Amino acid sequence: MQIRTRLTLQFLLLGGLIMIIASAATYYSSATFRKDDFYNRLTNRAWSVTKMFIDTYDHDAEMVKRMERNNPLRLHNEKITVLDFRNEILYTSDVDGEIEIRNDVLERVRLSERVKYRQGEYEVLGVLYTSVNSRFVVIAAATDTDGFSHLNMLRIIMIVVSFVSLILFFIAGWFYSGRAMKPISNMVKEVDDISITSLNLRVPEGNGTDEIGRLAKTFNKMLERLEISFSMQKNFIANASHELRTPLTSINGQLEVLMMKDRSTEEYKSSLASVLDDIRSLINLSNRLLLIARTSAEGPVNFSNKIRLDEILWQSRDEMKKFNDDYRINISMDELLTDSDQMIVTGDEFLIKTAVSNIIENACKYSPDHTVDIRIQHPGEWIEVVFKDSGIGISEEDIVKVFEPFYRGANAHSASGSGIGLPLVSQIIKNHNGEIKLTSFLGKGTTVTIKLPSAS
Image 1: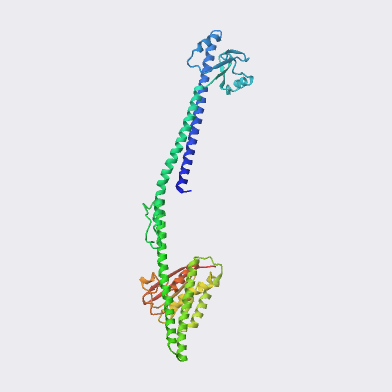
Image 2: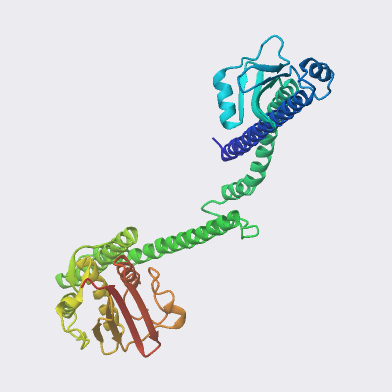
């Protein structure tokens, strides 16, 4: 079911329910008013006739009947009976005895002074009339033909009005739901025109303050993120293809040269060693690409394995020095770190070691003295590791882009690299619910600070 149809039916149901409740309340009020008004008139007639009867000489009932016969205030089918304290009838206009007079009713009248009840089509009232010398029970009855006729007419009018109102509610609901859904319909049409080749298009935001405007703003923000993501993906593919093509082209060229003629064993060994270096470069690049794809897909993770961050740093230092003897890696700890439990974090040991090794390698590689100073700190609920070098530094223009895959600063092309290290580090730290901060000045060095939640 379409939203417009559902809104129309809800509008119809709500309007119809309000209309039915209002009609029922009006009818109930009218019926109550008719009943109260009729009994008030019946009470006045009972008092009037009884007073007239008592005030006549010798309680002349026939004279009272003659006087009341043409009384314009007389009610339809009016029957009034006056009884004394012995329940003997002193006066009655109920010649045919249609109104049954029961002793229990007379007793109730004497006790409560006023009793109302129905007998067939008659509405009956029993009241106690007190004079100077005696007390009389008056039983008055009549039929409210006009009152019930008016109620029946009111009921018919309300049924017709309710039926017409339901039709009008449906038409109004359909119209206003269409007006309400028009901005969404327009948005759907705009979105239909947006494809992967036109992510630069945006949805009109209107006044931007109502719900539709906020929805359009949110959708436009999503389109911006998609556009940036697709652009980064496109650049990533182009850069990855370039990085993979370079060693492959080198391998292909070297092998073609080798096959042109027979060569000495030393020449073969030299060429194969160069090819082997390119293959290792390819393997390293492929592993990093797979790792960055894995970490990007996972997002933040709640790890359960507890690891000591200082041990990972020492392991990374030892492994780095095995392959690079000229690297100098200095590790120090804050004086407040007196307990080994203060250096425990939760995470994936391999991923954290990969991140730390990448930072250390970059710091040593781009420093003239191949030195990096590492300091472990524990401010509050975080464990901070600060990597500081005195290398070539990064310019302000490049520092905002260094976490993009394959991006390399203008002054970094003198050293080998693929531009994957820092993006990989950033993604790993984020997956461990941590933070990474980089500050750098050209020619003065770079400081990288990573913060991980403490598990202690």
